[in-house]
Length: 491
Ligand SMILES: [Zn+2]
Image (cartoon, rainbow, N blue to C red; front, side):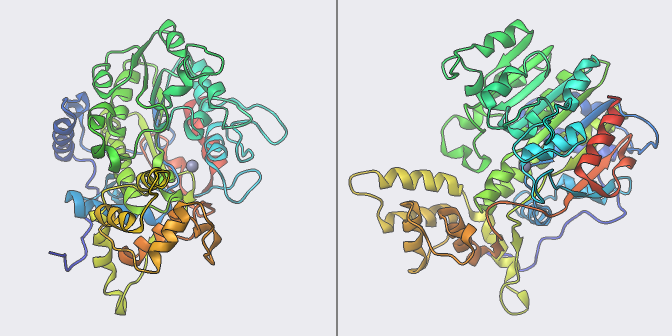
């Protein structure tokens, strides 16, 4: 039975619902039940947070929803209400009176539209660099990344991501590299300097897959890291001195696709689980730490115009934000920043029907989707290679099963054409691909439309709480964020 009324967000302006002891304990029990372990932060939760002007934080947790256009915040809130019966942590944080709000100018040194490498570098070294490069100025000068500066001061530094751990956003806090694509090179620079490394990208450390045959797992062991290769090993590693966990050769699989492969849900930890263990390991040291937590695949799903996959990734990121905020509330001296590096393809729910009366019902259809566009495309390409080729009715059935949408007689041939890599006419040239076409077909039913398939120059939303949060107010450039972060970190 379709809902008649739109879901109602619980987050109200001027009402700090986030940081009460009752909520923390409640949330912690819920989280502990889902994770299977009782985490230590629950017991020490305190009544309310504080922004203490002029104070420097002992710890900084920097949370990045990569490629999150502004419209995603409300789409995720409504998706969460519909599928989980509760709103998002990010909007609760935003509704809290103590939270500091900013809009960020995200340009890079050579473009109004940044890539992730230049964006992360701006936060890290406080200077804008060219797209594709990591902490090297247009003049060729290497700038010290914030994580390395923290490490040099004898403090702890961690990176947690759902992408390869050597991907642009984590790498931006750790290395100087002319080309972000040199991930095998970037991997060489991590071990010893980054105390906690968790995510995908195992292939870049594996002697069997590296061109130079170097065994970086052995390097990790030699440097005192505890290694983990699956979720169970990660959850057992909270007592590690240093932690190195890679759970996939490339990026971690999309959350929406996990149930399709038997055993994957047991193997791949959630971003929240990785974040919790990372904080536990880093916090064993009294000197304080910097931790970057990246929900990386929001960006990937946006490039693919795939709204259900994007929202599942955003909710996984939101769970990790909850972990960071719980810890911050218990520790009193932790600055938490929650933001994105740039928009991507700007999904938005558009008005559908007379007086937009159909928009809400249309959006409900997103919750019925059970497979990523990427997975459908991989399947389609495989089928196309078989002797019989990919049949139109097969593709139609797959899309109906996974998206609960029946493509029209005009739509289906376009999808088949795109799957066979034949050009598809679309006045918006960025949308003339399999993803672009499937995104538009889905949008005809769900009301979620896209402006293209790449990053945008939109201002990025930034929220901050804890000691030093006051620095991040109003309109702010991404490189200014970096300079303020370095000042607060004392590096
Ligand atoms: Zn990015």
